[in-house]
Image 1 (tube, one colour):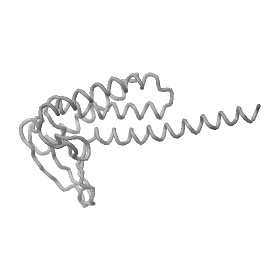
Image 2 (spheres, rainbow, N blue to C red; image 1 turned 120 degrees about the horizontal axis):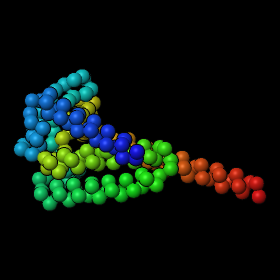
Image 3 (tube, rainbow, N blue to C red; image 1 turned 60 degrees about the horizontal axis):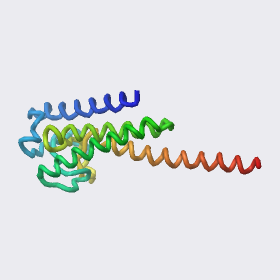
Image 4 (cartoon, rainbow, N blue to C red; image 1 turned 90 degrees about the vertical axis):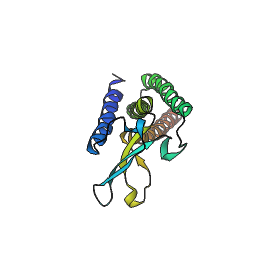
Length: 170
């Protein structure tokens, strides 16, 4: 059951990337062949863009290197294995959901790197000053990390309250 949520989310991420390439009438493998920068204005605050990210989040580590591509892909899959192990041991529901989101995001982007050498990004809020184009998998990772921090905070708070309750009864 623990792997079902990430599997569904990875599928949704891959469908969003496929739909973006269909919208711009380019092959799904466009990032293996070129670095397009196609944009369609959806609203005054949101654009649909097609961008191939050969780096990591926030445009860091840009550049086309085979070593970097395979190292990032391998790292993502190793981290996924580790997170699946942690997911199986996690009792907290928020922690489970958060880990599932992070796993899905890591796998979704690793699939892109594996097959195309770059991650397909399409969500663009640059019209309102957020100058990073991202994708659904990136959103999963971001929300998952926020959830893990919140889960950790709430768990620590519950444990302190329980310890205080035990101390008060002694």
